[in-house]
Length: 163
Length: 163
DNA sequence: CATCAAAGGTTGATGAAGTCAATTGTTTAG
DNA sequence: CTAAACAATTGACTTCATCAACCTTTGATG
Image 1 (tube, rainbow over the protein chains, first blue to last red):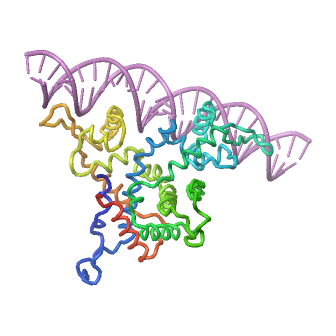
Image 2 (image 1 turned 120 degrees about the vertical axis):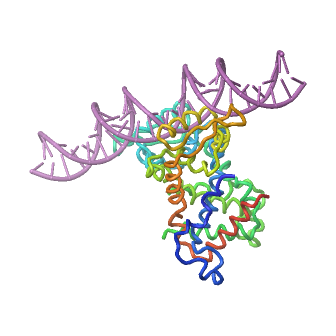
């Protein structure tokens, strides 16, 4: 009940269409069509993300941080880059997560300006559970036929190819 | 540089796998694989959403509201449902958007408890521009072959089918 | 080597977005 | 008619986010 807005016939900005309708009955902007549907599905799913994070008593952003914070320690500024937000925002964010024992600040040896973030054991454990939960495909995907899933996977791989 | 965490081989929670590796070389959870890749692509794209909204001087949530607010007026509580947030949150949200002349509150005739939200002319115009902008597919999608796009579109239609 | 600009992180002020609990009006059920 | 239920708002409070100012450390450059 939410994504119908994007899938409409491209606002009549195309002079042809109806002249050669017989040769190509589909609208000529396949990328937008596919994108609109993809968007609708993801949008429907993302709506639940705050609730999903809340299952672990995390805010959406904290969940995001936990996900980014893999095995390797991360500098605060690098994390700010990942989150596309201001560095000063990360300070408070990490403050709260540190207070909850999920992460720790570790001063870098090479450059004493930078603080590296590391997961605590509790943080790593929670991260595992979170990732496992996020990996669960939504109904709409889980219900697809194997053939479709294979095709979808392969298309996504091509889409994500370096170039 | 962000989505590799989800695509890993399901954490060895499956007792088989390796016994019958020859018959099925791919991991046996196709849905998770497809989902992980889909998630990675969408996640990469969603990172830019705040910036996209900012192109129109909207917050992400305001953009979201504008998108939901189609031709038909919407009750505050209905909007709260769409946003999966508390009704009291919508009050302030709409206050700000009303102050900027994008929407207006209109008391319902049938039920004087409810306030219907309508787009102003300015709001409707901005909405058009916003939707047009959001409909632009990201590079990764736009670069796919027509064959892939058609397949992707059809798969997404099946995924989004009512049941 | 001394200096100075640039970078990493924090702080403080401010505002948007979110929650919950309590309130006011308005419907609707018993 | 009275009481429960509902729609929206208010107020208190937390988190996320920005910006400007600041401090420390690094690295260049004279």
